Image 1: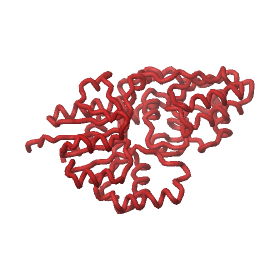
Image 2: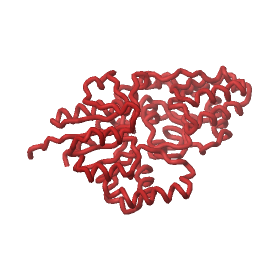
Image 3: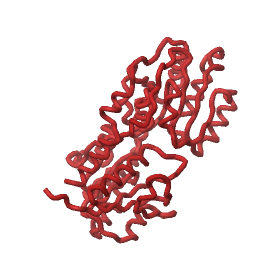
Image 4: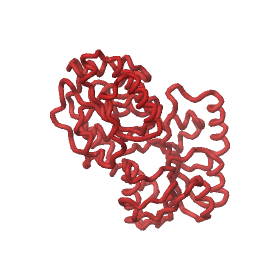
Amino acid sequence: MELKIKKIAVLCDYHLSEKRVGGMDRFFWLFDAACKQLGHEVTWFFPNNERHCDYINFNSIAANGKSIEATFLEENQKFDLIFTHFLELCTPFYKQVKKQKLAKQIIAVDHNPRPFEGYPIKKRIQKKIKGWFYASYIDLFIGVSNYTVEAILKDFGQGLSSKTIVIYNGIEQQRFTKRRNRAKVKPTFLVACHLRFSKGIQDLIEAVYLVPTAIQSHIKIDVYGEGAYQIDLEKRIANKNLVANFIFKGSVSNLYDVYHKYDYLLQPTHMECFSLAILESLSANVPVITTPVGGNEEVIQNGKNGFIIPVQNPECLSQLIQQLYLGEKGIVEETYSLIEEQFSIERMVLDYCNLINK
């Protein structure tokens, strides 16, 4: 059967930065290359226009201060298919696209985390209304985890189940250097995330503060990432005299060659969708300490490849850090085989390309 060449638009509210090259960047590069290899024409819409790494080969349009949606509508180009990443779901934008016949098919990918305690009732009602009015204009919803699919149906209506699927995020697992000889006592720790309140680093600071003084002085945690919340975190650390315990490393583009230097990834997050940092850490054979939010428990098996701790519970996290330090608890199994088998970026790209060919 002859493959039909398609004109594709990918709308991504994702700021490009040479200082922060992560799993989504690599997915975008591989997806663009795969589409072109099949003969498809791909146009990308980003907030900004950078030309680092494989982005130099992209046909991209920058919003430059406007919304991605407004930029797309102003271009007034017609496409066979559009994908949306990191855009709000079920808004008037999707209706406008279909009414103006700017796309034959719309596939909306949901990467958005939800509050652990759920949305306030007013917002829940608003989302249901938006689902009634605008969900019909989206041909397919993609959740990046089972948790996300359940959240889509909860937010916008169970009637969307027939056109909502899971495609897990994946990583280039072969890039990651493997951790060998994991420490059985006095382990080393890292954090790798955008620095904002919802990542729960303030809980980690409190947890380290609660560790007995004799152990506390030996705890070292390297923090990779950046964000406006870093100022508040640094104040908290100084107020608790923990400056020697936390080292802020900033954003780096080679985290794939950093994870293996540590024994555990700490991720006491309050809300998550499906964490690439978890996949990356496990791929480097580094177990993960995290919370039961989002799709975390779809990857982390408590006591096998990491530990699940309660949300916003510094006392529990402090006790676990102490037990790991003393060797009373620990992960001995290899953690990377699950990623190789189920969460490769090649599988992710293939799943998206198969949607184009339908």
